[in-house]
Structure formats: structure tokens, C-alpha cells
Image 1: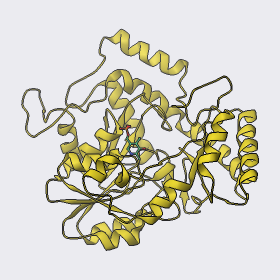
Image 2 (image 1 turned 180 degrees about the vertical axis):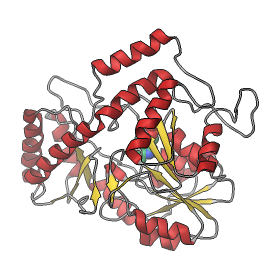
Image 3 (image 1 turned 90 degrees about the vertical axis):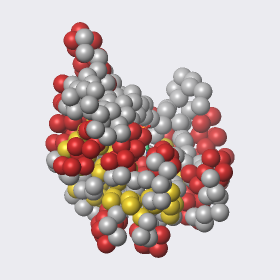
Image 4 (image 1 turned 90 degrees about the horizontal axis):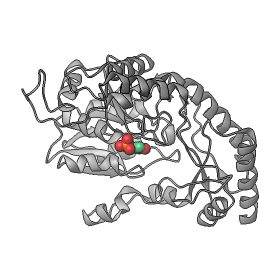
Length: 375
Ligand SMILES: *Cc1c(COP(=O)(O)O)cnc(C)c1O
């Protein structure tokens, strides 16, 4: 962890205020800190309704993390030993771990210049064993959903979107996470909106929604009547109250992120040795992270920016298949040159809504100066 000093500009921070405080107080006063009923509590249902409205889907189910959202979705699809699930390696380890947890096999494929999974590589990896494909909308930038959904359809595989980083982002006018078998969201502390920990699952399929509802809560309908293998993946009322307030702020947060990102692209996008690659006009970035590709000197730049109080960061320094755990599982021989390249060349800069104009100015100035020393 980076030591925080006065004037340090973090890469992300939760933005909560009086409204969240009041909502939490109401829950505390109600005495219902959580609700283990089939439908969930009042605050959980309120949060679900708001996300449902944004996504324009039939069902949203709140859970207690993005990881739970992914795990519950794959469980509902019946993913099991012998099944294969295709995913990128250039993601957070959670995307792959849920596959291992269900005794299925992660099949890692490479990414494109925009850091999202490459449909051409999915086509080569897909087989009769493929039960699901998990595109990750990395940094909040939508993956090639039309192509991916088409491949999945022709192989009777499901698409589970890892939209943990992309709430509010849109692909060809459709919200990420809203048009596949499942869309999975995270409300972890640093994400675009947050409840500290939390997650949500979106689907348009009534049967899958019912399975998710059961798996989230021990497979029970009336209580102590488990009908299938479930867990406790419930979102507590205390956190749902925060999530519900945050939903009201999403649009404002996104506008600020977009404005900050635009400013950085204008100032930095044209620098020698620097590229911004998530810029297709048919999709709307939510700018969870603003990430540049640096031709060389990334490590040095990271250190000097951090020393100068700029919370630049790297997501992800190690692709999943190169982590010790996955190397031990036998994945070190998988050849993913673009994922390796990205892990060595990307750098993310702060664009969150809490940045002041002078903050943003400082980020741009320090970055430009340090980069000019490298080239
Ligand atoms: C944050 C994140 C997750 C996991 O979410 P948690 O809420 O922390 O469990 C999964 N995938 C990606 C790409 C993420 O960024």
C-alpha cells in the first residue's frame, strides 16, 4: 500500500456523504440490520429496483460482493467438473477463482489493444466443453459483446458479463451487464458506486433469476426448506441502504469521471510514447479507471509519480495465469503475449469525482513532465 501523505491524490476513493449517513441511521433505528427472507429486505429491494431501472432488465438480485455475483451466476448455470469457461487472464483473480471453486476449468484467452478479451481468440478456444464465456469490461470499457454473444449462441454457451468495473457503461446503447444470461456487478469500496462491500446480478431469464434467489439464501423459500445447494450471499440491509443512495449519484459520478478523463486525454493522449486505446465511438466508458499504455519506463514512472503524490497505479501487474496459484495449477505455459504486454505497460491515473481542478492539473502536469524525461 502506498503511504498517504498530505496532498496525496489517491487512484480512487469512496464518495459518501450525509445522505448515506442518514440512510444507515434509518436502518439502525429500524432494528433490521439484515433480512434473510426469500425476497430480501426493504432496502435490498429498493436498491434492486433502482439498478433494474438503469439496466432495463427483468431481474436484479443484490449479493454481498462481485465475487459472490460471479460465483452465484456460474452456480445457477450448473457449471461443474468437466466444464470449461472461457475468460481473459488480464483481469482481477476473482473472475477465474469462481470457476476453480466450482471444479470447472478456466480457459484463458488473450486480449486486444483495448485490454478486453479478443473474440477471435474466443473462437479458437471454444469447444463442446465450453459452458460459459466471461467477458470482463475492463476499467469500465465495454468488451465486444455482439461478437462474443454470437459465438456463445452458436455453441450453446452462456455469457456471464463481469461488469464489476463497468456499472453505467454502455455498448451500442445497451448497458453492460444487461443483455447476457448474467451481468455481475461489484460495489466494493473503490468502485464507481460503493456500499463498502457488495454486488448485484442482472438477468432477463425468470428461471435463472429464481435459481440465483435460492442460491443466495441457502436454497430456501420459506426458511429451513432448502431445495438446492445454496450459501449466504445476501447483502445486509445496512449496506443496501448505502447502495441505494449511491445509485442516485451514479449519473453525476459518471459525468465527472468522463469530464476528467477527457481532460487527461487532451493533455496527455498526444505525448510521445503514450497511447489511450479505449476510445471506440460505439461504446460509453464509465471511466472506473483511466489507463494509458506507456511504451517504456513504466516502473520508473510509477515510482516517481507516487513519490510526487500522484496515486498512479497498475491494474494488473500480474495476469491471472502468472500468479503463483495459477502457475501451480499448470497455467504458466499458456501463451498470452498481449496480456503479458499490457501487464508491463499500462498505468492508471486518478479520474474520480472527488478530484478538484488543481488536483487534475497536477496529475496531468506531473505525468507529462515525468514522461518527457523517459523519451
Ligand atoms: C472488483 C472486481 C471483482 C470482484 O468484486 P468484489 O466485490 O471485490 O468481490 C471481480 N472482477 C473484477 C474485474 C473486478 O474489478
